[in-house]
Amino acid sequence: MLNKLLYNFDIAIEAIQRNKLRALLTSLGIIFGVASVIAMLAIGTGAQQEILSQMQLLGTNNVIIQPVMEQVEGTVGEEGEKEGNQRKYSPGLSLQDLYNIRDVMPEVEYISPEIIFDTNFIRNARMRSGKIVGVNDEYFDINNFHIQNGNNFSEEQIINSAPVAIIGSDVRAKFFAGQDPIGKKIKAGNLWLTVIGVLEKKELTTENIQSLGIRNYNLDIFTPATTILLRFKNRGLVTKDDIDASAGSGMRVMIFGGDGEEEEAGTDNYHQLDKLIVRVTDSRYSVSIAEVLSRMLKRRHNGVVDYEIIVPEQLLQQEQRTKRIFNLVLSSIASISLIVGGIGIMNIMLASVVERYREIGVRMAVGAQKRDIELQFLTEALTISVSGGVIGIILGMAFSYAIEASAEIATIVTPISILISFGVAVVIGVVFGYYPAKRAAQHDPVHALRHE
Image 1 (tube, helix red, strand yellow):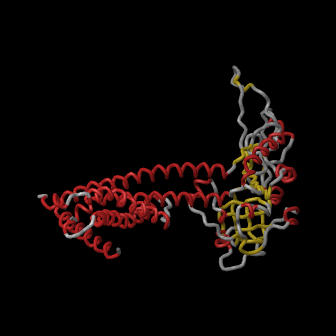
Image 2 (cartoon, helix red, strand yellow):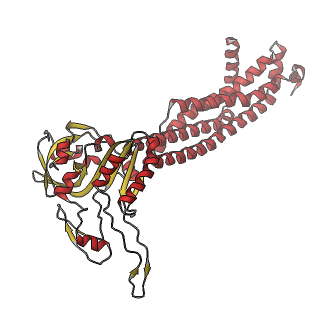
């Protein structure tokens, strides 16, 4: 049997060599079909990997609460003055919200505030702009940050609002090059902080920073949120004048913060916190917990919806579904090329059978069986499709790398995509080559020998 296969393979190679151009044109459909499928699968796998990395950055089990400015509605009177209901007072997003969520909500694993201020970092006559971020000790677990050197904030440091800091890797490289920063001081705005820890470098791409709305954490200095509120700036400080202003009395009060900046009460951000991040024990509870959090915060904020709740996993899953459908459509379109290539193989093989009637008659006259004739033409069709598949694999990998280089789209060529594409090419060679081979074997050798 093996000898027959090798003999038929030699005949197929000879037939292809006699008609090299025709064989090449016949295999073009297979070549571009396989190349297209590999490129599309590579784009799809790259997109899936990108979404998984985004999930890791945002946290699959996280629920994010962010402050927003309440939308005001009403009518305008004849003199241009607004007429409507008085605005209700809201304390804004604050640490008290965090304490209540921690005490009341089940299935909450970690919860951390985030308070962000733009400021300047100064040390040894060097200055660099950056962000000082107020958090707690659970923040680093929530965001999968690892402390490379030093320690996390202790409970005592958080309670006492200690002026301590954990710095990003780029801050260390800028201000503490070649030395151990632990125990040394750095100035953020008007606040001197003692470094107690250094974060491991977080690899972030520009695309992730832009698409996810995150920042480069390596450039930040982290300090306890209580330290920020006591020693730097507390936007949630409320006076009688602030309450009057928020009720629409028209008064404006200037509040001076720890970094020397000033805010206008009643018109600017009155929230203590810029973000609350809640990690639940299981992503199955994310949506239901987000709904409970919304009702709880609405009661605490006197019916004022000055916050929004985001479930990153839902957004990323929706994006993943959209990309999966898009990739499925593209792969289906690419598969059409394979079918067209198969039809081309069948067409050329039928023509080849007509051209080689005499050859078929001679082989059958000297003792070849119908099965031998079928195997001969089937081997030829299979050789064309397999050769096209191999060339298509090489071309598909080249397409994938070219797309990644030119369009800056992540592409990943996996062994499974190569196997699928090559397997489809083989199947198409067998399926579309079988009918011409069957037809060739059904010829009467007498009529075949007399064919001109």
